[in-house]
Length: 122
Image 1 (tube, rainbow, N blue to C red):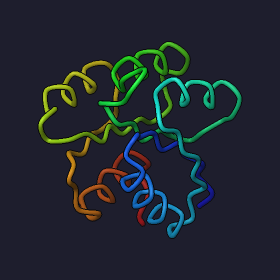
Image 2 (cartoon, rainbow, N blue to C red):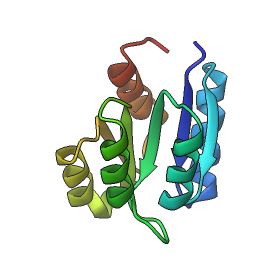
Image 3 (cartoon, one colour):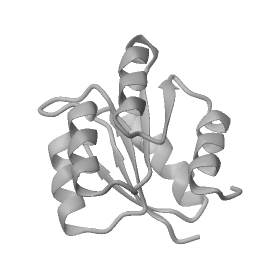
Image 4 (spheres, rainbow, N blue to C red):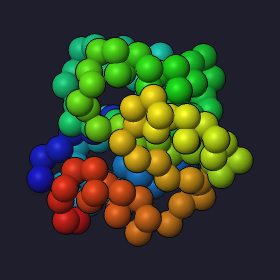
């Protein structure tokens, strides 16, 4: 498949699960622990998509999403956030996210969102 994606979350265990699964499907995965780190990586590397948590230190996902959209209107962004921040996920969709998944999530749910956003079959 060869898609290169950026996974942004301050919870290492969440990043690890997503990274392992995506790599098993042939994605190249780069990770970041904060919104600021993600923006730095996005400014020097080309990605086919972003998986973005909402609640992070330094810069949250909504703020990072706004900056991502200022730079690139087309890059797919999937929000991954806790169910306690459902409103934030809805706000992210209004600000240009392509899809969202609430933590804790089942892999099948995230897989379905990936297939929808990228129009692929995993």
